[in-house]
Length: 203
Image (tube, rainbow, N blue to C red; front, side, top):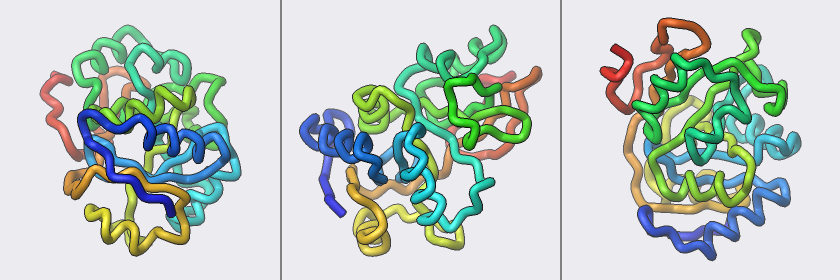
């Protein structure tokens, strides 16, 4: 696994570009977000997505969210009502996953049975830049062991994922909570998982 230490606020573009090259070639990377480290690939690369299922020891029915760089990009991948847009505008970028009706652009493997998808716009320069420079959304699933426990230390992550992942972008120790998941596929909004970030903007 290639390993690069990046500045969290002003990340070195040469290292971002190395990660982009890996993603475009169907690779799997680990990268920091505004919550915990994420395991990701290009959402349009089926083989890379299958690798993530194997690494996570998850069934193909497990649903992953994905990262886009900016709120203005959401309508490419989800159907956004006026109500949903107003809610998200208050919260994004931030540590939230919003569940929305899927647009046809998104691979059906990432749809729920209700034809929804989970979308993230993290408040983290590295994650945003990756999605922006790649030009496609990036899978976002927490870096955990097979029992679902998060890894926060880059050292521990390198030790456990060195042979499974192609590249890691590190921004130091990240000890946070997973994102809060909010269902905006209908009104009113429903909190599906309490995580990082307050939710007073919903009320």
